[in-house]
Amino acid sequence: MAVASVTGAGRGIGQAIAIALARAGFDLVLNDLSEEALAETAAAVVACGRRHALVAGDIGADAARIGDSMAGALGPLHCHVNNAGVPMRQRGDLLEGGADEFDHVMGINLRGTFLLTQAIARRMAGEAELPETARSIITVTSASAVLASPERGAYCISKAGASMMVKLFALRLAEHGIMCHEIRPGVIRTPMTAPVSARYDAMIADGLTPVARWGEGEDVARTVTSLATGALPFSTGDAFHVDGGLHLHRL
Image 1 (tube, helix red, strand yellow):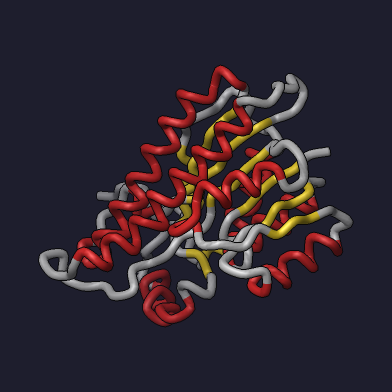
Image 2 (tube, helix red, strand yellow):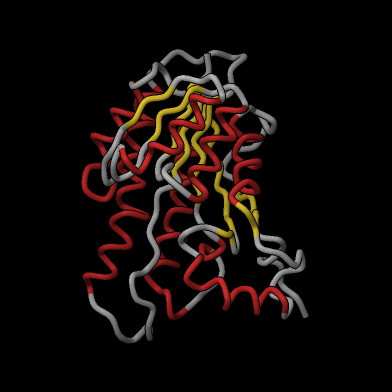
C-alpha cells in the first residue's frame, strides 16, 4: 500500500497535491501549522477512500521532529513532497531590509525544508528497497529559483538554495532507489497569490507567459502524481517547470 507525505497540505498547491495523490491510490500523511488547517484536505482524502494521518507543526521551528513523525505515521513512505513555504512578508529594495525578514524566509523555505528532508531521507534510505515500487522525494520550489526579482531577494535565494538541495539529495539517494525531483511553479492561483491577482491578471494579458492563463494547483499536482507513481524512472535531480513557459528566454 503506497504512502505519501505532503507538507503545507492545508490549502493551495499542497492541498491540490494531497488530493491528487489520494486519487492516485496513496494514503496521505499531511502536515500544516495546525490540525484545524488540515481538516478540509483530510476530508477530501477520506472521500477518496484513503487513510490519512495528521502531523501538525512549523517546519521552520521543529523540522526534524516533524520529518521523523511523518516518515513513520502510516508505515514506510514511498513519496514525500516538500511544499511548505512562505513568501516575503514585505517586498522592498534589495539594499534595505533587515536580518529578521531574511531569517524568517530562509528558516522555513530552506533550513526547515532541508532538515525535514534529511530526517525523512534517513528513514527512507534505511528501509528495504522494493524494486517494483517507485520511491521519491519531490520538492516544490518556484520559478524564482532561476528568475531574479530584486524586490524579493530573500525568497529568490531560498528557492535557489532549495533547487541545489534537490540535486544533492538526488546524488546521495540514487543508490537507494529514491529519485529526487524539483518542481518550479510559475504564477499559480492560490490564497498566497490572491492579494496580487489584479497585477498578475494584467501581466498575463500583456504576454507574461506564452500559455496565457493562470496556473492552477491541479497543474502542479498532475506533475507531482506522474513523478510519484514512477512515470519517469530514469530521471533524478531534474527540475520540471510548471509555469506556462514563463522561464523561456525570448528575443
